[in-house]
Length: 290
Image 1 (cartoon, rainbow, N blue to C red):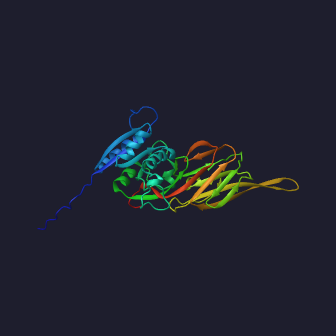
Image 2: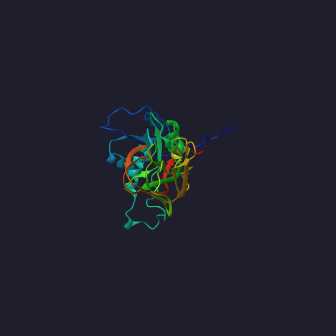
Image 3: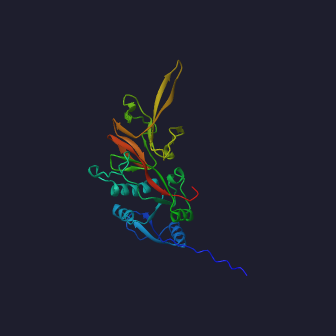
């Protein structure tokens, strides 16, 4: 009689923090996707802590914990808030730049994140092809496979994951737009909108194809839409020219205050701002099959 020995099973202990960003005092019951993801993580052998962050200090504590981090989010801006604090914590001052930091980077590799959609699905899920269902997110975190993508920083102290749109609608604006050494607008002509893109969420604006960004090519995409009016004998026609370029850094100086949308967050831009590329600085937990 032949006896087959059972295969030995090896368990790896994984510590995971599921971070929720909340307004006001914490204490509300965890959302259903958070509970489902936590259950799947625990079923896979992980130790799980559910954390509500009401301010930057709460985010900082989660980032500094050293655990695998899941960000429960409805929007890109919530994910961006976590990455912004990670950059603030890890970016070395220029005077203490480590020798092993690549020449085209100002920050080391940031801790990888998983993104767990809540009531709404952040655009990053689609644009970076990340898992979306709670069990799939848990499986990616347990598997530990990380895909690295680019990240944008700007001189206002923030970061951009997906992209930026400056201006738009029926109110053209004027400003200087320079990508590396290439001038895309010198401020003498109206601009309908300008896009600074890292991922696909800002590749198409109001039905107009602006650019086709690749979030892992080490370059940011800039597209500037400029109107041109053709006056005929009977009527005039307006066509739109889109100027496109890729590079390392872009400086935009509006001549007057202009609205801008940065990873879904609306504000006004009234001074020069420079965005630059941090190649492969961000990391995301993805399925083993990705």
